[in-house]
Image (cartoon, rainbow, N blue to C red; front, side, top):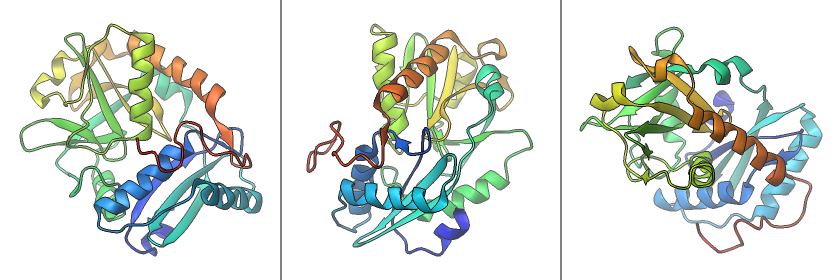
Length: 267
């Protein structure tokens, strides 16, 4: 998919997967983010969710993958669909957690999901040490902002932290925040990242993305988190997300507009 995207014009992009072959989760949010990201890059245009659904349905009918991962690229007024077969991450990664390492890369425009960052992220992934699953981007002031292709959450001193001011706001990140309010209503939420110096004090941490969903992290650099096993709060969030997917994921062949994001209503 990266090779295909390299040949496309610069623009905004978003990535997501299917469930059950033709169901996707909160497509309306992805479409809205495409338009918002493009606007932040100075490229204004309107993208209709129904048009996107038709394009996805056609791609699924042609490729017939058991599960698909899509990358939508919006370079107004042009819109492109890239698709590849998708295999979910192994269950053991959710059972045992993954290792992340800190890196110095950052987005030029944090709130815009721009194709210009794809090459930088790809180079950073190639430089990760063997066994590391993700690179966590650290700001000059020591804040752990986000992953190269994920959002980062930390449970520290009874507060759930995730950066929303200086990092890309992910669709799955918003879902995790929504579910956190359900599984732990009294848990305070902070929209700022933790500092790198506080990593050793985290009770739990995890990363989120559409492909990973909610993935526990049990080691950051050389620091073991939570005794080296996924924490109870993270496990509850994972279960809650699976329940939400079962309720809300909709077929791309469904013609109705997403109720979670009416046309013209930003979120």
